[in-house]
Length: 65
Figure (tube, rainbow, N blue to C red):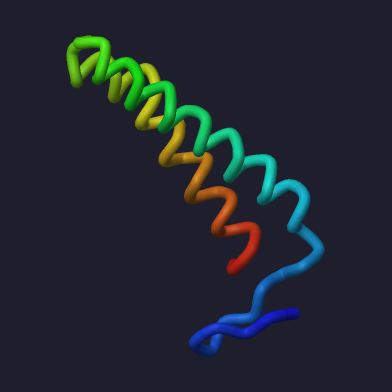
């Protein structure tokens, strides 16, 4: 277990957290690509960013509680 600023990482959940963080990164990448292609930012947020943020939050919660 690692400790950062008084919080201890829960190593039992590393695989699941890694999966969620990887999925989040892919969604953010798709969102950036969509914005660069000229898609409406509001639609991009609905399609990609909101879900990516949720996956990021869940992954970090699994690691750091």
